[in-house]
Amino acid sequence: MKVLFPLIDVTVDVLPGTSVSVACERAGIPLDLVCGGNGTCGKCRVDVIERGERKNVLGCQYPVSEGMQVLRAQDASDHQLLETPLATGRSFAPGLRCVSISYGELVTPMGGYDYDTLAGGPAGAPRPPPPPPPP
Image (cartoon, rainbow, N blue to C red; front, side, top):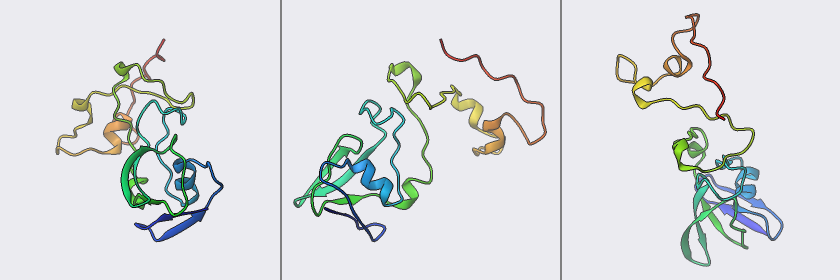
């Protein structure tokens, strides 16, 4: 069956029962699946048009249908950031490393956000030891 991605002008062929997230991956615009595709984190939400009706669905759980349009742009996949607080009790994929950083630590003196700040300082600067793993 054909699934359309009108924002990037791509059509993919998938088998019936395939999830929207698999179709997105085949189109080259993977969804955030930080929970491992279990439908618990909500990071894979995507807008689709199915039989003329626009819906916001969990891509990891929702099956495609013939002629479905997935409204996802390429740039949406280029900057995936986990923003879910760890205190929510949501489970994440085993391969995901969760690190807690306060927003105050992210802001540089110029008020921007950059890799050096996230990494612990300018390249070559001594770095603090990594935090202990969560229990």
